[in-house]
Image (cartoon, rainbow, N blue to C red; front, side, top):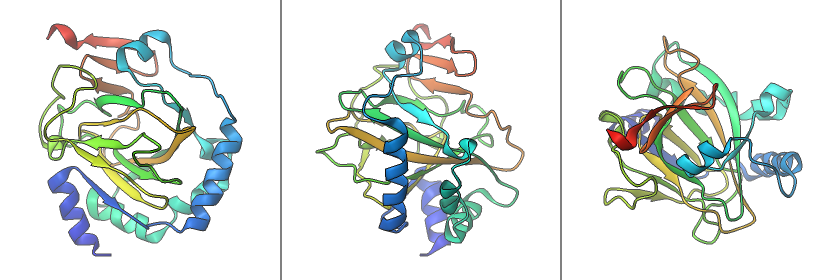
Length: 236
């Protein structure tokens, strides 16, 4: 693994995807714990306004906050750490691990940026670990627009529009995807029983730990701690 080359690709594109980064046995262990936690039909945790405006119905779980030490294995992987530092530089810090679960028939996630993009030095890094294959049959593939981390706010428009520059990521079990928080991205609807990924979020030095409290969608800015729309972007 050429870490310097991967870091360069990340800063050019705003994301990188590496198949086979983690061993299948570890991913199977994680997947078992995740499915045991969520069960067959978990309830959505966001309010109706958010679900309607964002077209996003992912159900989160924070296993490390509940003492699930098994989820520390990924975070302590030395290759994982080295690649993160090559991208973010010294002094970066972990935020949390968040498992994202989507049920069959859910809409996935609409186009968004994970944090406000006005200050290019202030952002989060998504380190997405896949414990199952994501393809056309399962649905839930991730769409990204390369290079958009270099611009400003995501354009106003249809929250699920097909954009000509978009790329489709179909990660496999064991794939690692690193995604800049300012890069435009969305997740396609779910066709199979469920879709799962685990996000080990982190950020560069001197970045506030609440960097992801506000998410930027094509039709609004949403503040998660207060469950409020802070800006209606349909009138911009």
